[in-house]
Image (cartoon, protein in one colour):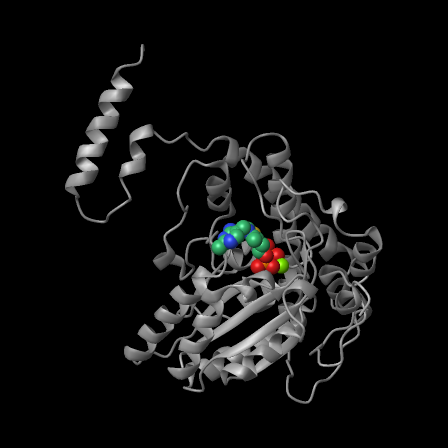
Length: 363
Ligand SMILES: Cc1ncc(C[n+]2csc(CCOP(=O)(O)OP(=O)(O)O)c2C)c(N)n1
Ligand SMILES: [Mg+2]
């Protein structure tokens, strides 16, 4: 196999696609979706706005205002498509890159920035948004999510859980253990793997010899590969898998075949390990451009609409910057406040020790 063969711009045959990179609608026998022009415009707006949030965050990091940022560039369709498939009562467990899903769950983007600025330890209430906290420990959230899904099952609730992870995470023990638990307990969960072809500098070839979605069959549940740059297909495939979960049909693994167009995080330099032509090939499959082409071709939107979304995105970026810079610095003693939900003797002792230490400094 030549390097890059499995991650080139050619769509693999098993890929579910409903919108081509040129913006043409295609049919699929198992997955169809009927979207009104209004709904497509709304998806387009989501895609553009989350890309703008991401751009502003990268700029803020470069200017020293954030400690680090993990860009979602290129993965907008996978996140908006799957995120918009969720209902209010479904629960989502993200990694650290799911800013588009956070957007769909109604999390104010400035709360994401607070985490990466180091002024909070999470940023939002997972219960308020049905969106769990970001997880840095690769793959660990898949076990938390399966546990949550089994709870839903025991409550007899009609809801599903979705858990996000990357191609690299599929090599983690936790992820494989979570597949086993979900399978044997028929848990109401969707495993949403964004195969962005890279785990930092480690290419997909170092994670697997077979397409990732096929791993599911070894665990005893269905797996499907979707064009992760096609928001229609991601929406349709995720909707169906969530519905299967809600109706007692157990887990599904979705492999969203996409590409990380930016660096792994702002601490990374991808030019050291991947060739420029790979990125160029994927730029032609941009998730936003194809929706724009579709809207234009079908006369579902004109220049005025695109201009208004651009203006809204600029406003959002500027507003986000202002609010990020105004985030208050935390007080040193705040670190003890959220360790336990109830008062805790050891925390009280450590807090007063630390307060005493701080008192020792000249004011
Ligand atoms: C258990 C664990 N091991 C290693 C790391 C360091 N690490 C951070 S991100 C990453 C790569 C993850 O790649 P992938 O799962 O493909 O997700 P992506 O970042 O591409 O979205 C690694 C190894 C970690 N955070 N946790
Ligand atoms: Mg990856």
